[in-house]
Length: 274
Image (cartoon, rainbow, N blue to C red; front, side, top):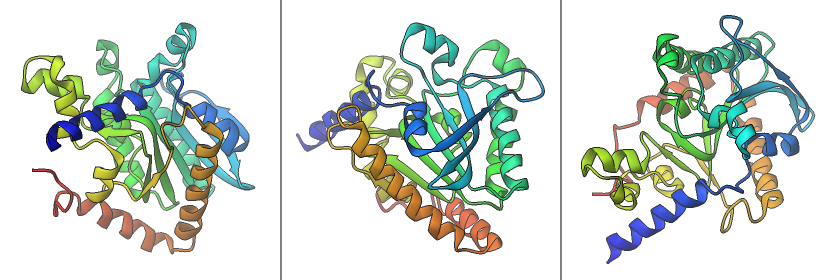
């Protein structure tokens, strides 16, 4: 019975993370930042709408902002490719991160994607290489990096902008190597067991915090779609606090701490469910 209760709770979180009225990246950007100047293109192939980024001010301080936007209407979803980035999206983010490093700007990333776009064209243009290069670039940036999971954090598509000094999750967001439906289809040959898979994947914020994958959870009550303004202000406070802490550190010290944070993954399993 306890196991069934955990499955129901995890599956409810998955459904809340996917709620059609849930605030998305640009909703947060319009509230959290001033003077958000969106930059376009990867200077190699084109502009990927799923990855949105540019210069902005956070609490008066210049920052570089990068996030995945999904869209709501059919027209918007097509424009933003449902939040699933192509290689040019990750190469655009790499270009913006280079600018951040050059001008000593803190980087704030916002994750909300089912995963990277799996189409043939994306693979032909080097999807895996683009994500791998993004991981390497983020791991060695000298400037502070804070990542926030707003809704779904799916697989490598999320990790492409997810390597950071601090990772924040909203309490009803999810972060996983694969979707519950995909996991169930592999393990049980049917997506009908997605509820069971959602618990087994330990994709909820509380479990990930116990495992040391994320540092902070922003309480959103029953869901950010019910009280978006309050959740955004809570997130603002967490980002502000962590940014001040990271900026007080020496750049080399910060990079070493980021490296050690990554290296400890898998070395201990304090919060894993048997």
